Image 1 (cartoon, rainbow, N blue to C red):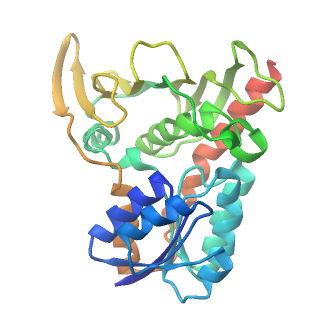
Image 2 (image 1 turned 180 degrees about the horizontal axis):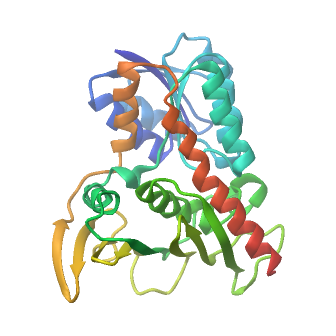
Length: 328
């Protein structure tokens, strides 16, 4: 039974905690959050967990791993502190606000020889599990284009999201990161070139000191043309529009949300005008990345070299912001 600490027990922190505890492979030894209400809600899931006031106190408890679900500005520094103490990490995305922070965490994990996980949850959906083998195995022929979309009818409800110094950016780092990671992961993390972007804040070109609420970007990943569109508070007639579509010379396949849902996703294969259902809505996938990390921790707490790929999406996002701000 792995002994875990949970740093940040807001909604997503508690959701991931529940998923991990339900595996029967882990127990919550400590919880930490500045909100008394969040701590009280976490205590319902883990009544025997010790409430600590700081990460330093948590690290004194001889834990196997710490789950980080704090504001984005804290992710990298806290992850490095945990890893340097010889403890494994599972962190919410983004792992860092930019490539330098992200790579710093990866380097710390490698140096400490400790397991590092990031909550890139869309990789673990039934929809993407059905599509990824088609892309990798050549069933779609030569994949030449990927279209990525994530429009959210709402904006984040915490002020720090709107401060680029704390968040690292707006809708691109909040939403686009998931889909950029999906595309790179499915394509085998090829080299990325030719990045261009238009970033808007309140319908005007993005300026330094603000965060984007609408973005379109394009890049070439190993010869594949990739287009990304994402936004907050778009008038799209539904709660969300989510899509990752892969187009090849012998067919296409797409992950899409159903009826505007943030959670119900399906996957279809396209052949000309025909379509075949690969997976249907109803998949409960939100905690699977957390579960996969716990299962890996049960096997070994040592560094997994696949963590090196966490830097790939950060590198693309840095290039998108550089390109977008140059247009402002």
